[in-house]
Image (cartoon, rainbow, N blue to C red; front, side, top):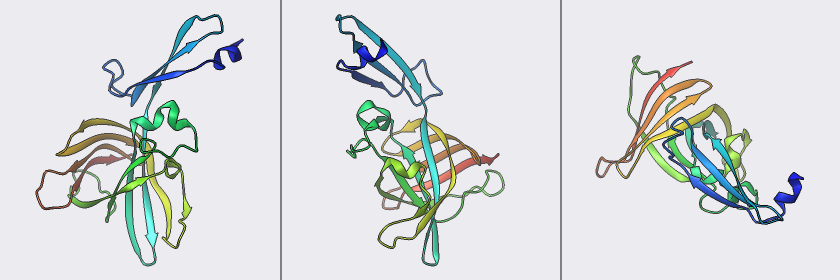
Length: 185
């Protein structure tokens, strides 16, 4: 009986910052129409994921910080072939490993990298065209607290770290800065 509902057109609506779900990345509402013409809705809460990868290239090492965009959880992005602009990981690079807040909070220079494909959330191994190899340093879930042209503030809960990651863009003529306010678990 359920399979009859899936043959009809489905429409997905995104509510990324719904007030009723503050701890989650968003709420997906899907509208379905049965063969008899009856409308019904399904609701799904989802959390957005992040990953910090250790990237080795020749004798150098840096870290890539990747955040899943809320649009990547839409039904359009569930198809692996769609690599459109919204089905991506927003990515920044920084040079040193994160340190626990209180021991020595530090501001690091970050570099904005091109968006990455969603498969990098779980990828470990060699990167094509001789660009080195990566291993996952930490991964988990996050919530956007602030996102504007001057700064991004993320509340993260990973396997190793939890706390806030702040990326500042408001310093003129300087690259963005990463301020980790985290604790190791």
